[in-house]
Image 1: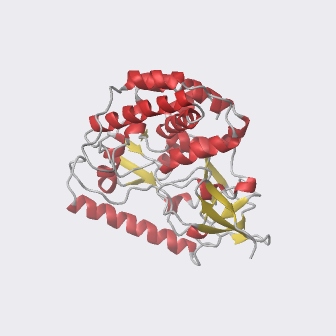
Image 2: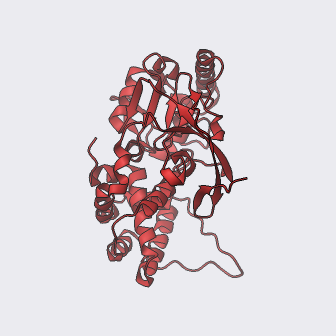
Image 3: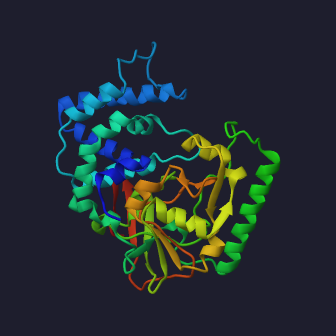
Length: 360
């Protein structure tokens, strides 16, 4: 898939990436920081307009009265912020922020709503063009790095379940059971205040890997939806070669996988996915038990994530799907893997990200 600004601006996570990049650039100057304040208020008021905004303040007295702020003020603020050439660090932090704010169990937050406004989206084009052309972002389009895959402890040490087929069968049984229960017990109105299983990824017990970011550790450390916030990690290199790999490089790849291996989850997902997408109707995820007959692994490129996650992807006139819970550059393994002979690495979380742990 070619990498251009339109692709970034089409997806909610891509737009949020651009907004986070501009906000980071705003911190470079006093005028930029003033513009960033205007963006904060515009996002807050966009959230309030969706009947979900709450401003948290500290200290005594009433909260401050918000200044006039809306899409027009946001556009002026965005266009006033100088945008330098993207650095690897700034792109990594902007991507991290976009991933961190992906949610599938509630409506999009104020920043996502603001970035989706047509005028604001257009004002983000300069940032999108810079990012799409940045040398440090070109790996976002690449397929799985087969010779450079790392697992982290949240998904074990790079070993598949003892009986992979049984694990996939059990996942299928539980998914069908949850769907049948939801159809019987949960309200049919998608607007009802109800939540349940919202993800569409393979079973959690499978091995997941990402490539290394060199001196910054595996990508999985930096880019994680709904993070539990661990403070340390032991990264383990994983042997994956050879492998039949399905690449998810954009919405059509994800839609094609769902069309080839459909599993209906309309009742179980209707409430959560309505909140995040505004769409009511039939919902499908891949039947991972069936996908395992086609491939050994499924990899999501970074651009595939930015263009596909947190949005409805149509399959036909009646059905749609959502890519939910999958992290950028992440590969799920539908067959066994083994740790490579190379030594693992210890990493520690700091305020600005992950660093190698000092030798013991």
